[in-house]
Amino acid sequence: MPLKILRLETQLLPMAKFDYYCGRHFQYELSSVERFGHETALQAFHLNAIQSIYISGRLLLRNYEEFLDKGFKAIVLLTDPYYELALRIFLLKRMAKTQISFFGDRDKIILAPAAEHFADVDLESEASLKSALKKASQNVRNVLLSPVTRQLVATTPEQLVKRSDVAAAIDLLSRFTIVGHDADGLHFQDAIGELLGISIGDLPLPSRHSALEDVAARLRSLHIAELILEEDLIFDHYVREAMKPTAPELQKANASRHAQNSH
Image 1 (tube, rainbow, N blue to C red):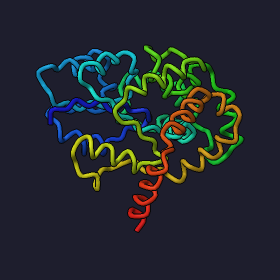
Image 2: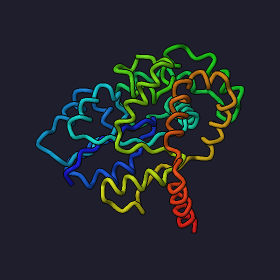
Image 3: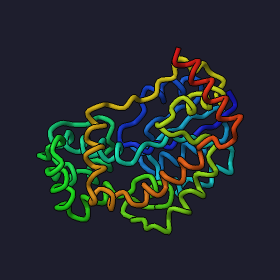
Image 4: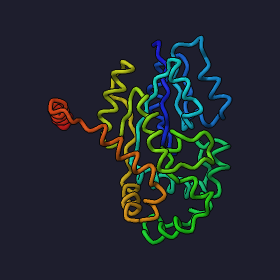
């Protein structure tokens, strides 16, 4: 299909099955592009002779924003910030004990201090989570600080964001063709199916894990977690408000679609 897609990955755990399912419909496909570094990513975007391209990755989008003017349509599935924080801490804890195949070399270097820091945290204990977050050094905290806002406004991994950056992040997000939220995966599936012209019945979306939902609930009650996620929480609030179907006919359509899908 003559279509150029960039799926911005915002989670530390890539949507590998989703990328495989969508990517096979394209002439050229490159998933988790951040593993290969900036130069390789740029080369993929510059493949002018190919009209059918699918690229996905946890990129700092400001460095590739120009390609949104050069035929690339951007899509993203956003996650609840507390759930993403829970997932990050879980993966860092796991990274301390085992090799994680989907982390590139640069990721491993950046994440190593945080992996060591969270190695012995007890995910089932609110006190343990609170203590680990409070004692985190700056380079450990940097791995957790409002990752989505940073992906949309920062140009280097070390760059930190402030509250005033949220507006710029929302502004860049407004250029996306499809913005989904894992609070309503159905909407995202429908939109992707329509854009790519593929059957959405088998479109694999990542499901939330109940154990991580529990960790996210513990983090929700911690003021330190709220401070770490401050920009992403504001960003998430505005995005979810904007995605609410306010028109009555739209609400009716959604209600009937949900009713059909629940049978």
